[in-house]
Image 1: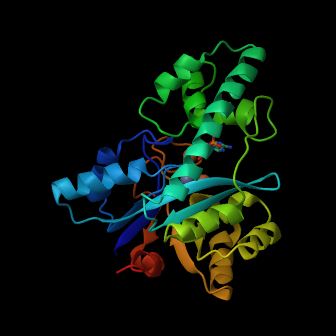
Image 2 (image 1 turned 45 degrees about the vertical axis):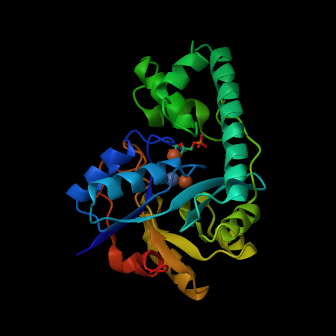
Length: 277
Ligand code: AMP
Ligand code: FE
Ligand code: FE
Ligand code: ZN
């Protein structure tokens, strides 16, 4: 059975493996098609494409990105596939979001200090070395290394998940703006992990409020209560392409600990993978 994984993070955002390591792991599974979907940047995709070309590997790679947006105060992630990675307007918007991420990280560090945990921006930047897009997992990993918490999940649950004392909001695009930017860059726009929105009716509202092309049906957050069947039916109803991936970051917790552990068949995402063929 051919497998695919269209949702993978690298060290260019908040993943712990480099593009080269991701490609080696994908070849070992083996996966037939992958997409690098780093948060708010396309550099990880470019580095992955360069490595696959250099090594002349038989691995299908889709250009990808995962854009952070807010729908009111609901976090909505928008995946883009087959974008032109040089499109100026898209790159400008991603740079703006990344700048917001850097500011937000500084605010979170300040709050964590106020809560009595010594932590410096330097330590976080060292942890995020090489990243073009800082995220809360970088902070969480330092907190674990410093021995304050057992694992990354523990830091989120106690301090930095939404509603927790060190959580900070950041200005972001709307889903509609992200979809528009992606379309302007020749990409397909996909609503990411709808189960994480937490309410099916709201997810459907978001899905239908913007001209999405695809829905991420298969994702580790959609295992309970036949969630996947529900999203598949919704994608079918709105005639959307279906996407799926592990959201692999390299560290365990809410996402798989190894590539290939969360299985998505190539057949299930074939329409998307072969869209530009
Ligand atoms: P940020 O990009 O700073 O908003 O952080 C989002 C990232 O943190 C996600 O892509 C996950 O990698 C991770 N994450 C978000 N929420 C949680 C949570 N509740 N528990 C563990 N990891 C999380
Ligand atoms: Fe992430
Ligand atoms: Fe996401
Ligand atoms: Zn992701």
